[in-house]
Length: 154
Image 1: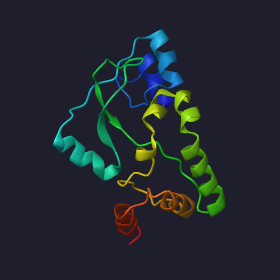
Image 2: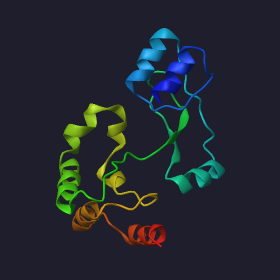
Image 3: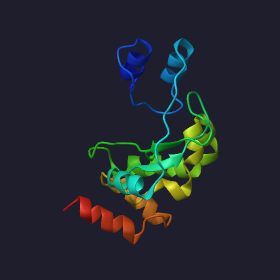
């Protein structure tokens, strides 16, 4: 991401993909005003994006993003090795769940990370068993999660 953004500022590339609200955007914008392009918020676009776990969402106004822009959004995720214990992942997910109020102010995108959006059903990599155990315990794991897991693990 950073190399592409630097490439735009240096004139080596015309455009790149990058995340919203990250430090490299502030640095780039100080040298050369940047802008994020709005994407179509259509049924067809969302139908394609859902296959890769993404969607079109209204973006918050921030550096380079105009109010009302729609952008491709991905759920916030944490990738973990299968070698990490179930207990460790369970404890981590539980800490996030129980401390959302403290976590959300740390970054603008975390404000959209709620208990309702943590255990997404259009995931593209299976959940770690420790996360599954926690989400089952709090009632956030559904038949949709089970079906998607079976689909991915065939």
